[in-house]
Image 1 (cartoon, protein in one colour):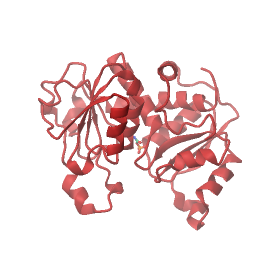
Image 2: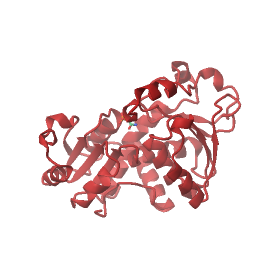
Image 3: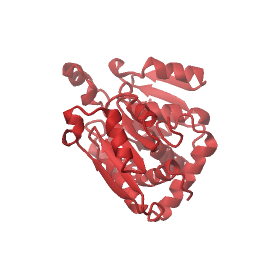
Image 4: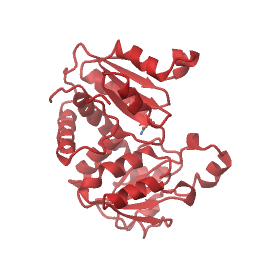
Length: 304
Ligand code: CP
């Protein structure tokens, strides 16, 4: 892997995370900084996206870079059989940084091994989504004033949800207690539970999702059941509405509890929750701009 690529932030030290959080906070104060004048950022989205692509592109624009890329691989030569390796090598001729989303787990790591241009992983299958994790950490830090010693409830699709996998790993140095709430079919994969055991991370698995069972959450991290990852759509239909958060379930929750969701939402948070002071998912998505400005600078070794 080339040294400036951001494929995962799971192994980042507390100091490195703190530096990125503080940089994101500075970008929130002053998002327009022409630090990337003359640079070109490529955004290669082999899978659909709204927030990740647009916030990366906005971040690059606000930093003064030019943006090239695609949102649909069907309009590229990959539809004629060009390999990912050749596509990455070609784009490396044009861009200073490549932001890539791909359906295959490990695609970002592979891309980072075939080029010297830094790659930022914008999501690889069900594996990892480090820029989402950075904005999640920034959102938690902003709302809770710390990352240490928090009760974090992860709810919904914990099997395919790359955002929960990424977040879980990057919280390991902050003494979290995780509560995993998922239907049997979508429970947290064994490899992540083993990771928790190896790293001494406390976790509880539960299936109840009530006003009482979420009362001591600091962060309630809701996720969408990801239809696109199912091979059996009947199974998707069976589990898709397993956990739905409604406003009337928030009566006993901690005053400072915040509801996060990587979005898009489908049915798992009813619209009446949007008016609750606990709802934070739209601000969370806005934080993505500042977190991604910070990550772009990290990948390009630019101080701010
Ligand atoms: N959270 C997230 O990755 O959203 P998009 O799929 O819209 O980019």
